[in-house]
Length: 493
Image (tube, rainbow, N blue to C red; front, side):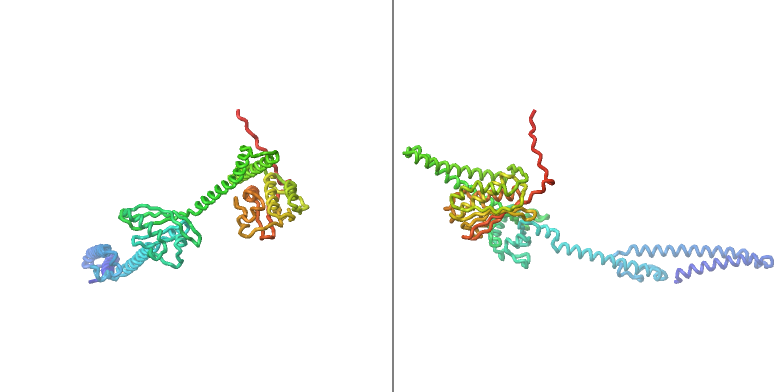
C-alpha cells in the first residue's frame, strides 16, 4: 500500500503540472495545431481532476487519522505501558507516524502508575504507623493514660503511665498484662469487662511511684469499633493523681488536731482553777491571787493563739490590710529589743544591738514588721539558757536590706530547721524551756514572704545556737516614691 505522504505528493504534483501546461499552451496558442486545440480543452480538465484527487486524498488521510486516534482513545489506560503500534488496526503507513505518540502515552502511563504506587505506599505507612500528633499529645499529659486492646495486652502507655507501671523505656508495646506488676489494673479491667458492653468503672488505688506513695483515681472506659459499637474492642484507663488533695486533707486534719490540742491545754487550766474557786478551796488572799494569775496567763495564751490563727488566716486568704510606707528598719529592730529587754534581763541574757550606721529603709507595714521582729527576738530569748546572749544585726546588701537574729541557745538539727516554719511544729526536747503555740515562726514567714516579698532562712547546729536571716527589698528613694492616696469613703445618699 502506498503511504499517505506519497499519495498526497503525487496528487499535488499532477495538479501543478496540469496547471503549468495550460499556461504554456496559451502562450504558444497562435501557432498551435488543431491537436493543440484539443489539448486546450483537456489540460484544464486534467487540472481539475488533479485537484479533485488531491482533495479526496486529504479527506481519506484525515478519516484514517480520526480512525487511528479513535482506536487509541478506546484503549484502557492500564494497557498503555504495553501498547504497541502493531496491535492497532490502522494502515501500515500510519504506524510510523503514530509511534512517537504511543511512546509519549507510554511514558505518561508509567509516570501515572508510579504516582499511584507512591500514594498507596504513603497511605499504607500512615495506617501502619501511629499518629505522631496523638503520641505527642498523650506524652504531654501529666495524668497517666493506658490503652488495653481486645487481646488483653497493653497497647499504649504515655510517659506518666510508664513511670507509674515502673516500665523501662526500652520495653516495647503491646505487652501482656501478666508481665506487669499491676494487679489493680487487672481487677479494674475485670470489673469493666463484666458489663460485656461498653461501660465505665472506677476505683481509688494507692501505688508506689519512685519509692513515694501516690493516690490515684483510676477510670476505665471500654468501647467498640465504629463498625460494631456494641462489641468490646479496647479499654482506656486514665489515672487522676489525688496525692495533692490527700496531702491537703492530711495537713488539714493535722491542723485541726493541733489547734484542738493547743486550745485544750489553756482551757483545761482555766476550767480547773475556776472549779476550785467555785468549790471554795481558796482560803486566803495569796492563794486567790495565785489562782487568778494562772487563769489570766492561760487566758492570755488562748488569746495569743486565736490572734495568731486569725493573722495567718487573713494573710493566706489575702484579706489582711497592709499599709506600706518607707520605714527605717533600725527603728523597728530597736523597738522590738526595747519591748523584750525586761524578759531578757530576767534570764540574765545579754542582748547585743549590732545595727548598721546607715539609714536602712524598707517599704512595708511597720506594725507587721515589728510583729515579725518581736517574734524572732522572743523566740531567741526563749531557747537560750540563762547567761547566754542574743544579737540583732542589720546591714545593706545591694538592693536588699538584711537583718539577723542570732542566739547562743540550744540549736537545732538540719531536719528540725526544715520544719521550724510549719504550723504548730515544736521541738519536743525543747518544750520544757518555754510554752508556745508553734505559730510564731510560721507567722513571721508569712509576714516576710507573703506580705513583703522577702526571704527568710535559718542556720543552726545542736548546741551551737541559731541564726535567722531575713532579707527585704530596699525602699526606693523619697524622690521616686509617691505616697498612696488615702481611700475616700463614699457616703450613701
